[in-house]
Length: 86
Image 1 (tube, helix red, strand yellow):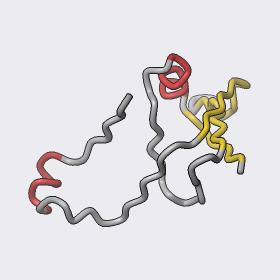
Image 2 (cartoon, rainbow, N blue to C red; image 1 turned 90 degrees about the vertical axis):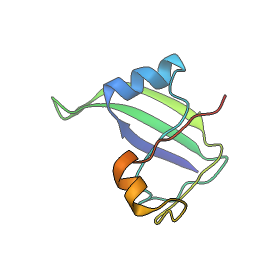
Image 3 (cartoon, rainbow, N blue to C red; image 1 turned 45 degrees about the horizontal axis):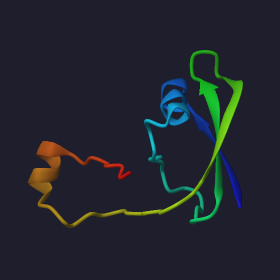
Image 4 (tube, rainbow, N blue to C red; image 1 turned 45 degrees about the vertical axis):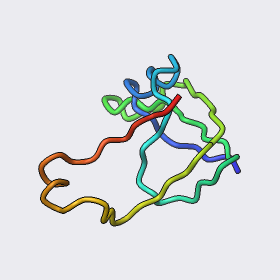
C-alpha cells in the first residue's frame, strides 16, 4: 500500500539527509511492514506543499496506547523517547 503524509520541513530535511530513520505519528491510519510511506514536505507557514517528497519502505511498525512498563510518576517526570537503531 502507498501512504501519503505531510512532513514539516525540519523533519523532511533530517529524513532526506539520513539522520532521521524513524517516523512518529498518530496511529489514525493503517500501516504495515512493506508499505511505502510517501512523505510530502508541508510548509506550516504558507499551509502549502513545497513540491518535495521522499518515499521510504516501512520496516517495523509498533503501536501503543497504554504503556504499563514504567510507573506513571516516572513517565510524568521523564516522558518517553524514541530510539532509532542502525
